[in-house]
Image 1 (cartoon, rainbow over the protein chains, first blue to last red):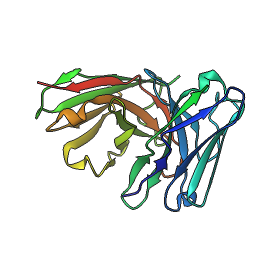
Image 2 (cartoon, each protein chain N blue to C red):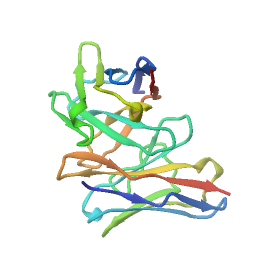
Image 3 (cartoon, chains in turn cyan, blue):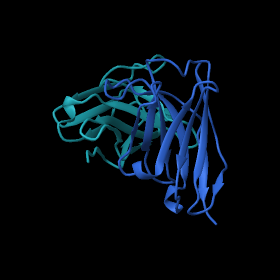
Length: 108
Length: 122
């Protein structure tokens, strides 16, 4: 079955740029979404179709997807961005949604 | 503002069937533009997609759960239901329902319920 791989954790200083990656076989040929989830809260969609931001998501969130890697970039990271981040794609071969294992972003 | 609200028993005994309901407000569950999905997250672990349903009744399920899962749509009540049979401790998780704009097209899950914790224990 299709798998998406994420690093377990990423740390960044406030105001710096955080980069979170998601890798999978030929991932660039799929549409990737990104979510963040803070403890006790529902997940929030921050990027869809690789690089589009839903209404209400700050411009500091951006995404890209090419080759085998999708990337979520958070510019000018703020303390409120500290959360678990998940990538998501569709596995065409088995017709189901796949999530990455998640990356915990720590803003130090 | 679309609202989704999960409801369920909280505690289920091993080998029994887990039943959850998601009530959708301020949106049409009949819309041809969306699927309705269930996602779960065990404590300390990542998100796991369970399955989804479309207004036509068409469903897709996670292959790892397919043999134990059923998702149904009740348009008269604006509800999506989830049943998981033969539960074990591994099914203990926070269960969320979410509106799915179309995973193939990469539209994502744009609205989520608040989640409900289900514990499997005797």
